[in-house]
Image (spheres, each protein chain N blue to C red):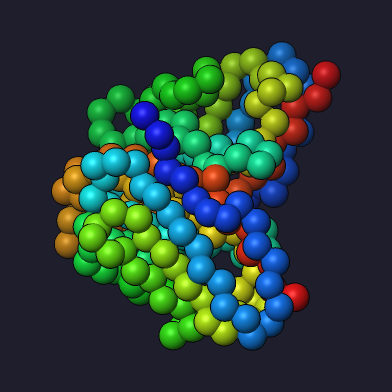
Length: 116
Length: 117
């Protein structure tokens, strides 16, 4: 069974440019999460999809970040325009039924974003 | 609000010795607790979790963790460390009440474990 996959693994862009990160969750997982780790700090929650609906987007830092999950399958996270402080590692995770709150989430390898 | 503290940025231990990576948490009500590990150039891998029941939970690669409600701790342990255990370890908590705190995980800052020969 394929795990959570993220593309690209690394991205280096200039300040002001646009970057789109993609996440393919484990097949059959309705829950999809985005997290971010900035400059060696804690991994912080960005948002949570249940199928195609945004369940919780309380962690999105500002309106330069746009997440979508068309059809409830893969998800994209677009940063436009990118700023220096957006640099970090962006993790995607997926899990099964959200009512089973003890269920662990499975993470992808992350996308390392560097804004220069 | 829920929070996790990992007081040690780095833990060094000799191979064959026992290891402990510390984690304390703060959450309303009873927590769901998790440990994840990140090996170099890899994603986060699930190690173990505490949901309910026995306070000592066993996970992958010989790791275990002890839930201590009175001390609000969930320290990760292994009786005999291996060089291959060297990695970045994250503790995380999730609120266990469906209507409180959402379904998100709150992570600590991570602890780098270095096991040397």
